[in-house]
Image (cartoon, rainbow, N blue to C red):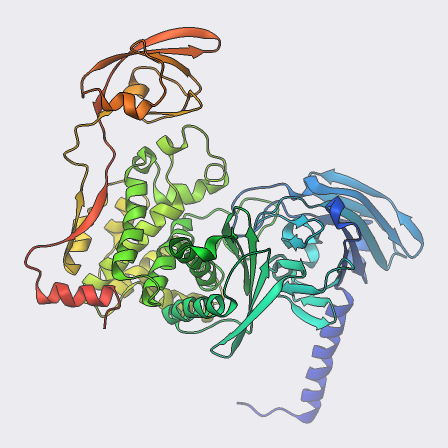
Length: 598
């Protein structure tokens, strides 16, 4: 290191101090209150301090509301819940106009030093991606509550929360700098820090020196010690993949509801929703732990190991990537693989969970139509907006990605003779892109990383199964661990129509099925089949044979029509794994490495 004079050091500290002071003077301060929680309205005060000269010169400041939230890839138009927006300065009210769906323009002048914005947000949708307030608690997904100034996205902000008078606890991943006041280093941190306000019970554990909190909202019967220990086991197993924990602290926000499920990842926290009875049933409880594993593993996969599109974010527009099959679907693969390595799933339970994903995609006609990459890219318009034809034309990047993650794991295990697996790809991406370069990776960089870890050219894998829709040759990848896939439905002789009924009406029609080919439509009311009123379609079809012609009388748009339909063989697969006969010692050894068997 070169020598530096005392004068230069003092000058340097002076410059840094001045820059920090200017940065803090230009910060945003929020205040959140909820005096009437039964009304479902949050009250927000937003203060913009020390306006830039550029803002004063142009004569206005634009404040915006995000239109989506990271991790949930749909434009949700959060501004629809904003009302009663006013602006003022020390000199009185300021003129304010809404110039587009999510932007409010505040008129300022050379004498305006500080702007105070006040508004209300209606919050009555209890999901992990929205906000909710009633007389039992408040939950905030910050993207749906707090406005921002685009030019100041990199600046710090403070948030003072004034809980309803009957509530005593605030749970969030944000840093608390004084009682009920929190600091976000920038807009991304603010938006990435969900908040639970109420009287939730908080459980605690420590993992690798990182304090973890579990904030439990809602009535539920659970053993606090068991839940805490089991979640810790899951977290330890998740950490073992990349080996390094990236956080100083971590917060779980768990909503125990009459019915619910799902989660949303954040930088050092997550929100998970589950049914309050989940702890009383072993299978359901393991499903809950699988959800915990999924969201916790996002600490690495998505929040740090990520495609370039997933940060820094554009909160006003879609952020496109081909990689959700790995960012989300790969995490779906890991959720149950983590439970296996934690000893929560037996090898048989893990295999069954994986085969459930295989059966899901292989029985979905859209799997042959939409690639995993296309599914990822079109998440914004298709995944969250399914219609009656979705299963015919799309495949979930969660389900397909989970299957592909498992195949990629097997491919790496096989090509390296058990020396490496998918964990090594995660570690490579973490070290080389997140740690060294501080950024996400491109599609090409991800594929190159896969080649390096697998020790061979993997281009055909990506061409055929990621960007293409070729059938996955499962047995090629399963043979090295001594298994094969078999269809237990292969010899069935059941007659098949290809239409599902709900309340007497057709709710879906399967692509290339008899119902599809002979003209039955969704929303057709089935009046009769072969002159009989249909009480139970499955029972009626059980009496028919492949090749039988049935007369289906329907009512469509108020008119009656009759269709002659020739029944076909049931195409639904039921795959399971079986051991290969005469397994070699090498196959047995690789199976043990695959299943973490000592």
